[in-house]
Length: 462
Image (cartoon, rainbow, N blue to C red; front, side):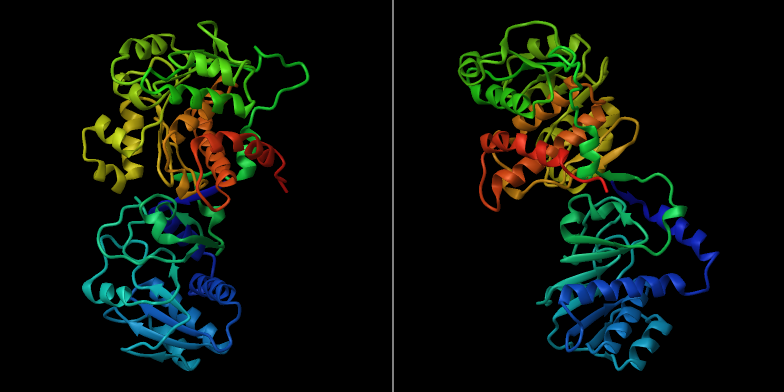
């Protein structure tokens, strides 16, 4: 599990740690970690050209001390000072190591962004924004890209877009939540000793070994009914493919003992999946809504009235009451959630974390807000962010496949927050396999699900 914390939590942990260490130790540890990542990124330090963008705060000090370490290893290090003052000790260290302060920087092999710290709000000032706009080199951000809100993932105004973010002590929320996550690039966490002083994380990011523990694996005494039966109500005469995709995904996971189907895609499903049972019967969980269209309110109401664990997708969302009588997973994309919350779509996309949390509390359900970094929020306040998948996954039918995967995990007995987050992870992993760096279709994601699950089950936990 990768954990992310609020700025307040990280600062409290740092304060507790500093009580046990000589003054300046944490900054030296951070600088050493930053310099090591820069050296690894460049493939060596001797002769490299490094540009530091230095603000007045602690991040600027980290950058200056790291610059001094890089200069001592043979790099040409230049610093542009953007704040009213620079960290005194860091600047002295850089100058004593033959680093230079410049107003017009030369060409660089890497730029180190130490403009503002993790507590800053709003976009960059005009002078910093102009300098950043002219960068023509890879960027490594110190703790977080300057100009993003690391507690919310919001981006309001000009900001740094980094190739790598080197963060200290613990990851911060905005490094994993869009739209700020896209500005962070690859996130490297440098251990400076804070972990024993950190409490519960604000956001979790599942890793393969976490999902491995969640995948339901049948024991020798299992039979099809003990493994769970998923009911699917999806598809309509206009959208027959939605029913096929939901059912196909559920079958492909292999985690349930049976899938039952009711809807307009019956003939197609009989032809494709003779193992699927057509018609009503006892189930342990439902998927409802995908491709139903606007006129089938009664089907959604009927499924929800059974008070079983249910995935509600697409057209079913507009018919979902706020009062939850049973565990539900709602799977909106930004446009659908905007309609549910009665706000502009742009607001949801700018505030993914806050929007998912609000909906989870209002509908008393787990909300899986789909996106490049899907946010999974539970009504009790837990939040996970999914980091698997590829941009090619933004394609017709992908959401239907996701609903089938999550529904299968629910029917197999997973708690609904785990089913939603593990389902999103496996869906993204299957998409990566199906894509192999190129285009994919929803059907190809279905075809890759068995491989994604096999690969995950084979991951070493050591």
